Image 1: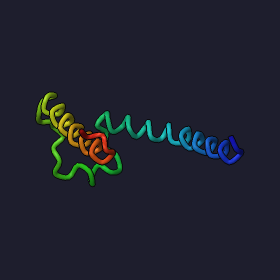
Image 2: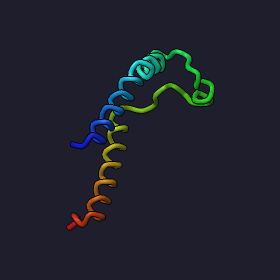
Image 3: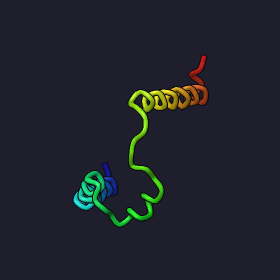
Image 4: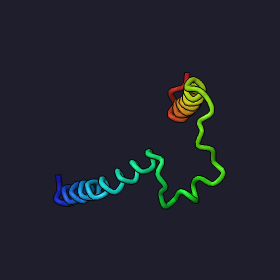
Length: 80
């Protein structure tokens, strides 16, 4: 591996380490339901109550995967 590759890895690792604490704290506040700086912009008119059941979400995810998977297979030439 070249020196340029090692430098890129070091910069990426430093960036990941630098954002761990601030991003973790922000996520903890969001999941705890505390007010965050973006709360007024993101919660306007949006209900925080989940309506639905686990099987409706799985159904949508399955349909999405089926459509995307079949599209991928057709684009790549895997369709029969």
